[in-house]
Length: 122
Image 1 (cartoon, rainbow, N blue to C red):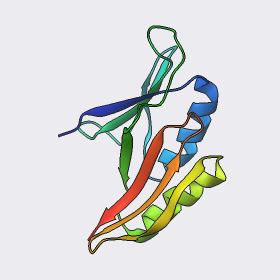
Image 2: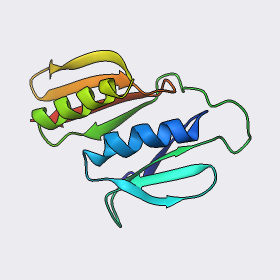
Image 3: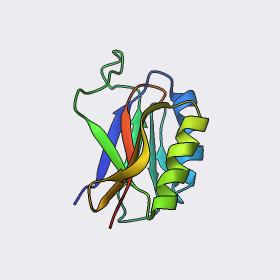
Image 4: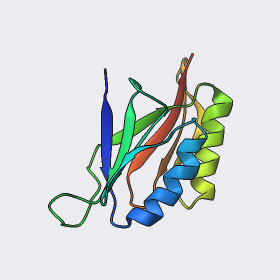
């Protein structure tokens, strides 16, 4: 259902280096880019995460209540994504763990403060 999600950054080269490594764990790479945006995905028809310098040229800011969920594929996959994000300088928002009967997730904020979770259902 989701085609793509776009998050803002104030430092595109720094964000690109972060997401190249982090999303590489999911097999994603830059599919499209221009002077202010990078679109990451695993291939045609799959959802995309894009990072961008805002079109209006104002400061990028974090949306209150906005969070991007990355499917980890397994508990181990969630752990790997969370640990890589922290290794790359992200800040902890809740380490990986079981939350409820069927949800496992680990939360972080990227270098620009955008909130993410790596999750697995089941």
